[in-house]
Length: 133
Image 1: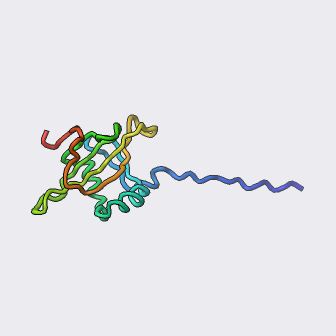
Image 2: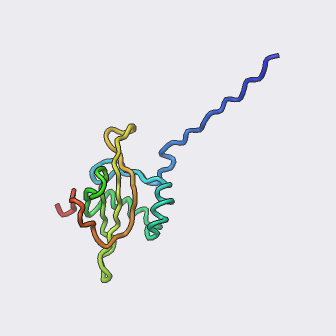
Image 3: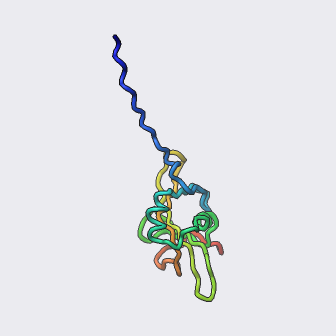
């Protein structure tokens, strides 16, 4: 009698893209992704004002008013979208993106680190690009 073979266990590989809730090209044509994990466990927890504002994150990346180099992290950039300009003052949506070398694409791919509403641009960031330029 031939013994039955042990069942082969196939580990289901979860694609990195399955967790993505946003993938777009930034204003410079680079791919940027936002994972569901980052959105749910960090952005919505620490910055509840971003709830229902995923579209503003994409707009900040694709059509920002200002892009700055992050003052604290070499491979990060800050995208600012003018969200509200009214009697209570100006508000921007700030999206911080970290760029890492990519195996799936030539060059670098951006990963959204955080997104929130702020009254002003961070003063010690260095200007990379502005809509007015």
